[in-house]
Picture 1 (cartoon, rainbow, N blue to C red):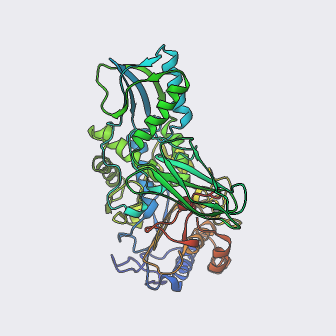
Picture 2: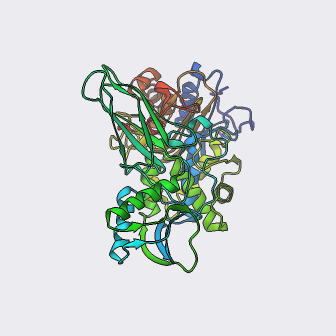
Picture 3: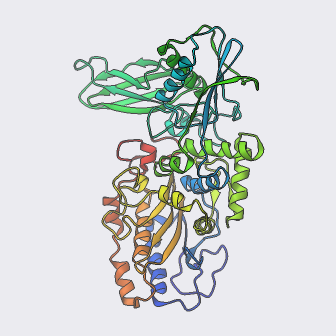
Length: 519
C-alpha cells in the first residue's frame, strides 16, 4: 500500500506516492513519517488517500491515491460552502415575507434556516402593528421558492426522524441558535418520584407534535425519543434520572413554520378565521412585513463549525434557484459541480450538498486543489475562519475539532473540515508548518472495520505542523517520532460528527452526529 522511497513521479492509481525529484531532507523525512503513520494495521483492509501541498504554489509534498474517488462524508461541505460563497455572495441573506391579497394572508419563505419562534412572533407583531386585526380568509404557507422534494437522494430511510436528516423546505424553523432547521428539541426530565411519568417539554412550545409519553422516572437515564414515520407523533419510552434532550425532525416543516407564525398572530391579537394551507403568493400581493437573515458570511460559522447538513442542502437549492430559477437539488448540484471543475476538482460525484449520501465521491487531490484555489478568493478570510479549529474549546471556534489535537503544535493551527459515516472518516484543510509555510492537506479513509482511525488523521496534521524543509533528517525524524502516538490520540481525542443506519456507533461518532453540548 505504501512506499517510503523517494520517486520522480508516481504511478497513477497505483497507490504509490508521487514525490518531487530529489526533495529536501525535511520533505524526505515527512514522506517517511506519513508512510509510517499510514502503515497502521487498522488500514490493512481499508483505503486511505492523502495529499499534502504548499497552499500558495500547489507544490505536492506527499500523495497517496490522490486521484481515486472516496466517499467524503461531510468534506462535501467544503465544496458546497465555497460554491455558495462564490455564487450567492458573502452578503447573501434569506428573506421571509408576509403579504396580503383579498381575504388571505401569505407567509412566503426562501429557505432561511435561522428562523426561530421569536422571529415568527416578530413578523406577527409587525402584521398587528400594520392595523390587521382579523384575517377573514386563509393563512397560506408559500414554500414554492424550492421544489417539493423534501429528502435527499440516497438518504437512508431510518435516518429520516433524526435532526441531521430533516426535510428541506423554503419555509422552516429552528429550535435554537444552532439553527437545526426543521426540528424540535424534546426535553425529558424526571417526574415526581420513582415510577412516576417523566416530564416532557418541547422547544419551541408547540402543539405541532403529538407527544405520547411512556417514559418513567428511574435510577438511570435510558430514553428513546422517536417520531413515527409519515406524521408528527413522537413516542417517548424508557427511564429518566437526569434531564435528557433529543432533537427530532418534523413532518412537513412548511406547516410547522406556519403554525408558529399563526400562534404569534394570535398572541398579538390577530385572528385568522380560515385554515392554514399550502399555496403560492399572487404577484399582486402587498407586502405587510419582512425579515432578513444574517448574511451568508456569518451563517458559515454554525454551518461549518457544527457541520450542519440542512444548511448545506438549503444553500444547494438556493444556488439552483439563483442560477437557473429552480430551487432543486439537481439545479443546485449543477452549480456546485461547475464551480468545482473551474477550481481544480476534475473528478467528483455529487448527490447532495452535505455528504449524507454514500454515493458522493471526491478525490483527495481534488479537495487539495479546491483548498489552494480558495485562498485566492475575496471571500476566503470568512470561509477560512468558519472552518473548525483544532483544540479550541469554544464550540463556535473549535467546532467538530474542539476536542482533537489539544496540546500539540496543531492546536489553534489546523483549520479543517471533518467528515464521518460508518466506515468513512475524513479531514481536509489548512496548517502552517514550523517554518511558517502554508500547507493544505486532504485525508480520506474508507472501508475500515475497526473504530474510526481519526487519530491517524490527527498524527498527520500534527506532523505537518512540525514540518520543516531545512531541518536535517535526524531532526525531522525526531519531530515525527515526537508526534503523539495512536494510543495517546485515541485517549485524548473523543470522537467528534446521533447514531443511525449510516453513522458510526459509540466512540466512532463525531459530535455533530451526537448533538450534545460538547460539540
